[in-house]
Amino acid sequence: MANPPNAPRIVLGVSGASGALLGLEVARHLARHEIAIDLTVSPMAERTLDHEVGPTAHDDLQALADTVHPIANLGARIASGSAPVAGMIVAPCSMRSLAAIAMGLDDNLLTRAASVQLKERRPLVLLTREAPLTLAHLRNMTAATEMGAAILPPVPAFYHCPETTADIVRQIAARAVDLLHLRPPTAQAWQG
Image (cartoon, rainbow, N blue to C red; front, side):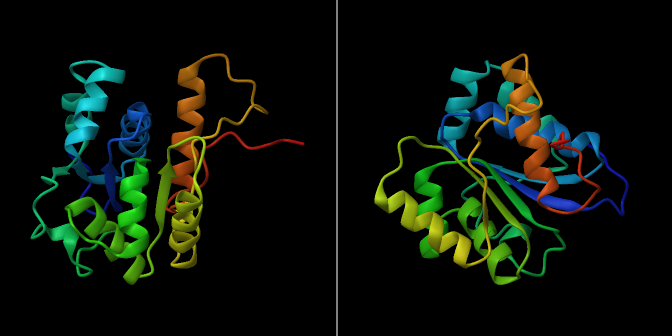
């Protein structure tokens, strides 16, 4: 997808947790707001997209990206702090990816790009997806938060009276993008 040359650029990582539609909706939201996307997708995310969303979901996701980086390519531009990106969203974020990010285990491009955001003090939003949570999950969330990540479990907001699952997913995606602080907020706000 071609965005204006001066468009903000973010990294979107999609890991293999359930909730693959979240990654696709975040990409749609970014594209609608002319935010360029550097995309990296894990093999389990590809499988989950196919199972939960449909056989064309991975292609649909890639079509929204400006650049697609293979997850094994640790030499990709987004593996360096010199890459001009404004932050990163991991949607959904598996507990395996969370653990690797929390421990600084840069073993694939998704976890390396997340580490880059932390070391460069850029926004990193993790849509952590698991239930119930173990103490290890909670400790990894704490560690990632202490390093500067925002943990955004995809918990539905009900104050805006969603009528469909799509409404819920759109609100969560908008909230994730809002946490990057690149544009005025677009998620439906509580009106009191």
